[in-house]
Image (cartoon, rainbow, N blue to C red; front, side, top):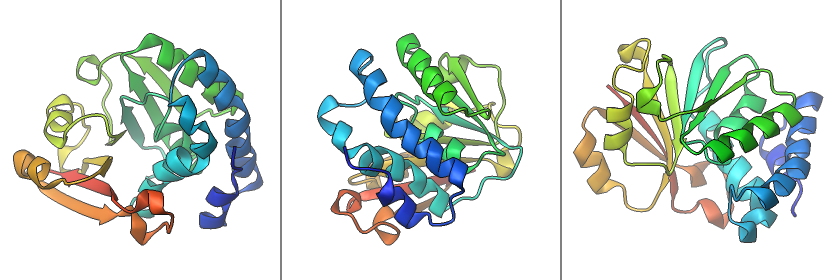
Length: 205
């Protein structure tokens, strides 16, 4: 598996602890992934580029406020939530998924990385009673669905945002949802071919 150097090259101000946590992710994740299929086993060699760096693209557009509560909808294998929790240790990340075995695996990963700012929830986002400042997701659902699921889940709708990592043609999806939408190609930040048709999409009321 490729090492964490690709992440360090794009985020040169990482602390020693943050680097250690990201390196530990590369040791822990493959072993857990053998038992619980969080990502394709054929893609494990690309963990840092396709999953960690992809998740951290969000940090190129947003700097989360200390003490804020961010929900990762349908976290799956802990992306983008786990890498973002490493990068923003003063922000509380709620990683939610309806699949219990995935949440147990993500909870184990967060424990192994000694992440004190990660809370795991085995639930559907529309059923949780928690309230959040911002929502993030990676290729989980359409913007329209995410907007509907987050109805009544934000602390302050005027300051809220749904931040998605998406790929391909987004024109139809954007027409369906309304509101204010900002789309940024990830290729503006990262040079790897993998990011050529991938985007950060920020939706606001």
